[in-house]
Each structure stands twice: as C-alpha cells, then as structure tokens.
Length: 255
Image (cartoon, rainbow, N blue to C red; front, side, top):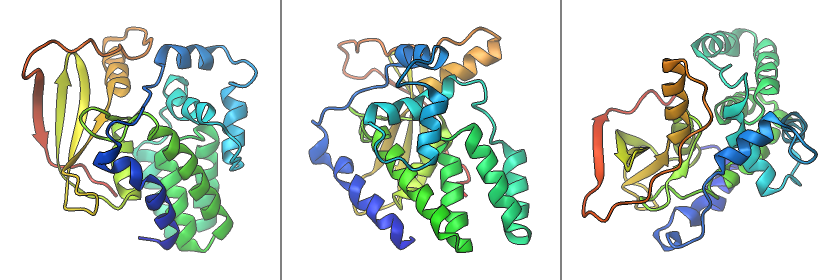
C-alpha cells in the first residue's frame, strides 16, 4: 500500500474496532438531503460545496461533507462513470496520461464526491508523479471517508451507508482489506450487503453496508416510477431470527 494511505488507515482504524460498537452513529436523513439537493439554499448548494471539495477545502463541515457524498445520488448526473468511461481511461493511462488526467478532471467536475473517481485520480496521479493532484485526491478521500464513517462502522448494529455497491470495494481497497465472498441480506424490508473478509489486523470477519439507497433507486428506475429516496427501515420485530439471506456470491472485480 502506498505510504500516504497509511494515514487514512490510521485515522479510520478506531471506528473499525469492536470497542467502538456503542459509539453514536447517525444515518443519512434522506428526505432532508433530497430537499436540499432539489432546492439549493445558502450553505447547502451542491455545486458550490462541490467546488470547495474539488479545491480540497478542509474547512468543509461534517454536515456539508455528508451532504456531498449522500446527496450525489439525488442529482441528475449521478451516473456518469460507466464501463465506457472506465475503458477509455484505461486506454489513456499508459499512452496519453495528460488526456487521462483531463478526462478525470472532467468527470470529477460532474461528480465531485464520487469515491470511485477519487480512487482513480489518487492512484493514477501517484503513479504518474503528479504529486499535487495525488495530494488533492488524498485530502478529499479523507474528507469523504470521515463523513461516511459517521454513519456506521460496518458492524451488524452499525452498517456503513453507501450510495453505490462499488463504493464498498473502494472502501476495502483504501483500508487494505480484501473480500472473499458477498451476501445480500434483507432485514425488515431493508437491504444490506455483507462482505466477508480475508484475515486482517482488525480481526473483522465481515463488514456490513446499508445499500437501501442504490437498491430503491434501481427498483424505481426499473418500474419507471419517480424515485423519492429510500424508505426508512421498519422497527425490528421481536423474533430471534429476522434476517433473510438472499444469496452469496463471489466478490466482483475490485480493480
């Protein structure tokens, strides 16, 4: 792992430890975030905050950073990094690095809080010797990672909220963790992804992610119904076992 990522690992290590299970985590307020994205106001204008993130503004508050990461799923241009863009970037990395960097910046201007694009920027710029570019990506990764881990630490009681299943693997990569298998779980009408981990220094067997936002958005898109955001999980029923495992699959390509 690159040395500069050691600091991120050190900063996030405490929230991954079992002793932190009783810590206070706050789930995203999806309805509030959706309203803020749809009706920009002073302090929570997405484009303005996105510009500050791109400038590596470390004065962004935790609330603003949470808004940036979780709010991007409510934006019209939320899906701009597909296999087309990835394949194009991959083809440019070796033969035309300056063009690759320009494309990365173009995509990041559209989605400044994309964790996947930030990961691409960080490793590409580091490998190419673009030190300032890599440093900016690193700072922004830390800002967003702190916001994400304010929602949970990946345990059963405190799942980590993500706006895309792809971000689960990005989180693992940044924390130098590797998965061996995956379970899609449904509990009281709410969806979760569980990634089983290879032996690691945290002694974690798995990490659990709340994927209510991307699942509900996908369901609405397939039914051609307006998407108003994910439903809140229903209160747990008093049963010994309410969890339904929908199936285990091998991990997707993390590259």
